Length: 219
Image 1 (cartoon, one colour):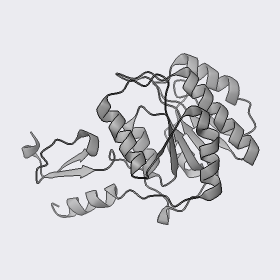
Image 2: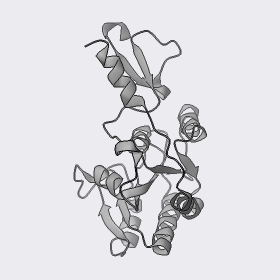
Image 3: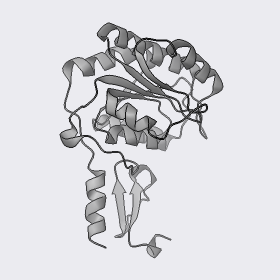
Image 4: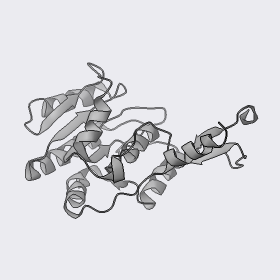
């Protein structure tokens, strides 16, 4: 089927073993999100993107609770803001917990429960205002957007992770190559604190540049 097209863009985790001439394999899932010029951090807060259940994966409530508690601790210790969103896939019990602990919290400047109200610019706002992004582990697209934003990215593990071996390999490879940090929920506070204290260089993704160059060759 790929022979019908001048160009087929595939993220690495979906690429076949045999790569044809008309195929471009990207590191992450293609996204419209880009970092600020020079990948300079703009916001100083912590963004939290909570997904939900997918085929072969169930997001554990305990993992989310520990992650939120860790984020609240670092926010209180450093007096920084939190920007939080759920997704339409987020289970009701997790939504209920998040609303309970964050609705009136002084450090939480944005809380979006996607099943109740989901403004189209929520994710962009969170990326703009955040220096560190904490992301649940089930969505390559969500992780790709976070990495492409040019911020520090922490992916928390779930106590009910049951994704395929291929998917888990993708996540681990991203960490091995320095694009993300995988964290146990109870370690969120210390890992975010390390990013905010040491501020290591953020590794840039060049997928968009590769796509543009490839398109120039066929347009």
